[in-house]
Image (cartoon, rainbow, N blue to C red; front, top):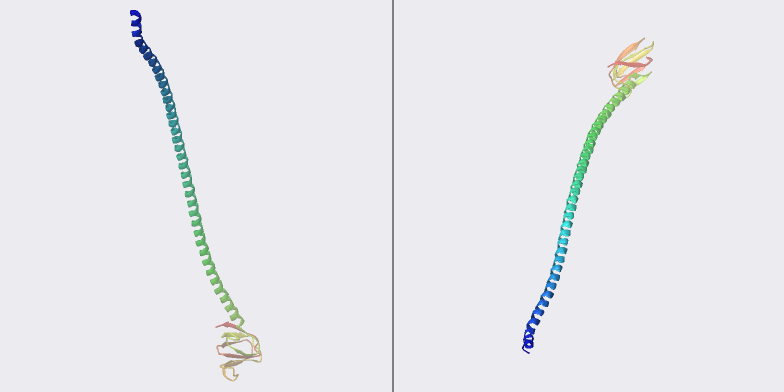
Length: 205
């Protein structure tokens, strides 16, 4: 009876120890499970960090490549702009040179035209003088309108008569002559009269 009572009294202690052991086992299992989950989470986080670092490295590499390409584009653009500016400057310079040359040519043409006009005027004047350096046939002729004053010569004739006149009046005689054969007359009066002397040609002033 005593033995039974002793076992009964020790039973709660054994029960408590058993409960404690079960709790310890369960707790260990829980802790083990928690540690495993934490390790998994840590591994996942480390993988995410590694992936993020890799992405960052890739992004930096792409950025550097993009900056290098941008620099090349800027350099090419600078070369293109510089070349275009040089070409434009050359074109402008050539255009200015051509404009100056054209201006010089125009000036030369203008001078040539002016010189030609003078020559033509001189020729025209010479032709007019030449045309008026001949006194044809018989009649009374007016200076400048019909002839140019000067020294004239004619072949003359048997009945040749000439007179320099101070006016259109045939009796307003400055000088006259009846000539037979070739004759010379200095005609510097406003009028000149000639009969049967043939054609008079100017031979001097």
